[in-house]
Length: 74
Image (cartoon, rainbow, N blue to C red; front, side, top):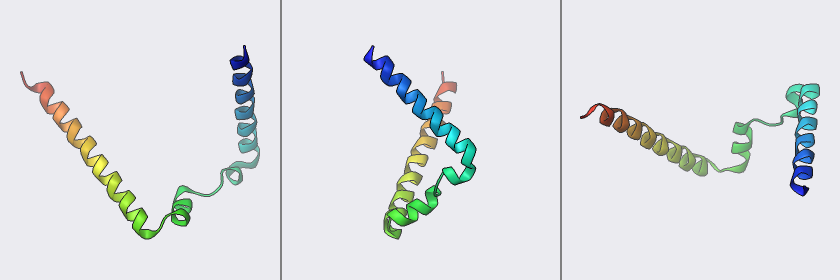
């Protein structure tokens, strides 16, 4: 029963946050990710992160190509 009360409380918080966003529009959202990223990380850290993302995307594409290629082989 306690979980149900907690769940309801969290749902109400989420509804209130949505009402706030609807009332205040873009003002309620805050800074963009690019602005925050620039404030939090050094240029070197951003470069390393970008490289990591590029490598992960390459792996994803390679796996998808392999999956497509292997599905046609009998």
